[in-house]
Amino acid sequence: MLSIDFFKKNKIIVEPGEWELKVYYTEDTPEEAFEKLRFFLGRPFKLEKLDTREFSERLEKFILESKEEKEFEETKEFQEKKTVDILSSDSEAPVVNFINRIIIRASRLGASDIHFDPGEKEGLVRLRLDGVLQEFEKFPMGVYPQVVSRIKVMSGLNVAEKLKPQDGRIRIKLGDKEFDIRVSVLPTIFGERVVLRLLDQDTKLLSLEELGLSHEDYKKVERFAKKPYGLILVTGPTGAGKSTTLYAMLLLIKKLFPHKNIITVEDPVEYQVPGIAQVQVNPKVGLTFATGLRSILRQDPDVILVGEIRDAETADISIHAALTGHLVLSTLHTNDAPTAITRLVDMGIEPFLIASCLEGVIAQRLVRKICKFCKEEYPASEEELSTLGISASEVKLYRGKGCENCLGTGYKGRTGIFEVLEVTEELKKIILKTSDANEIREVAKLQGFKTLKEDGISKVLKGITTVSEFIAVLERD
Image 1 (cartoon, helix red, strand yellow):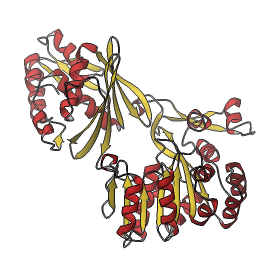
Image 2 (spheres, one colour):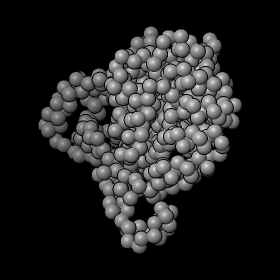
Image 3 (cartoon, one colour):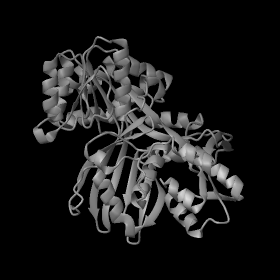
């Protein structure tokens, strides 16, 4: 943020817009003022020259509006572990203002992560938007060490330590929103690489209806949530939205059965849910998923959420908890739903125990949605039809042309691709005989099971996502 004195001294005014800035100036505005403005704003702007009288009127209005805004508070407040209003501080230090601007812009764009990457000649800022890293801004390597030092001070890290990885956190406030920023610093050959994970404390948790489930799959998941006991698994790679689905199920259970005792053990606790007891894993003091789960069982729970089944011990305790009258929700890292059964067997769980307690498995991926502001229809090519497995000759598909609302990507927001395996009595008999995922899948298909690929194709044909996004997310499996 530039100070009011800068604008008064240089006879320059910036009128903000979401996608375009307008800069007013007079014949007395020095050329170096524009250069400084380009560095701080980090995006193009339009120039408009005004006469002295009109400029003075605009400047007075600009100053009055600026005084109503909040800015970063001083470093001391960060060190005192207070939640800091991110629109604060009259500091004119270029590095402070640079970092403030990046965080503000990233939060407004809905970025989940900010990457500061050192290079040989210049530093690079990248934002993860809708799951994809995008280049945002470059800056001179001469100021890179100052940028890293400022972030370390904000997150309470050791500024002098440059050879070891460090982790910290920053709590900030942007208007009426609060963010918990997880900071990771990693030494590389060109300098320390910094990644900021933005966690919006006010983020509204999605309901089951908002996840992107088909009607049939939604009904299956709803039945899972109504089970009095058993094991429900959500599978997929890191970043597939598994936690979001688990939280959506918890919210439904909490709504349907408000008197149930719900306890979770997570790493980390991503969202705080009122009325649910949430436990943070802490291996340093011996609090792992397994030890936490054992303690939870002595807390008279009805529903237990285990962040992830990582080892045989956690799997064994989860299975026995499900067998003794508890509804257990958890995640596994497998590519599809039937493979979850194979994975449990590989962990040493007996097939008869799996058949006795497993009620359902949800496999999922996240795909980017076509931007509704620049969505267009086009005839599908032969290659696209072949990819989708469609023989019809005239099929209309959709894509985003790219506009200011989606930063030219053609995508805005994400939705889920799902396959939901409901473990029926017939499937339980199959599980007792074999843990082969292909055999389990074939039997499930006879009972109406839809695969991830089938759900993906359906969303492409409905104009929710594109063929290229379908290929990028699903075909690589």
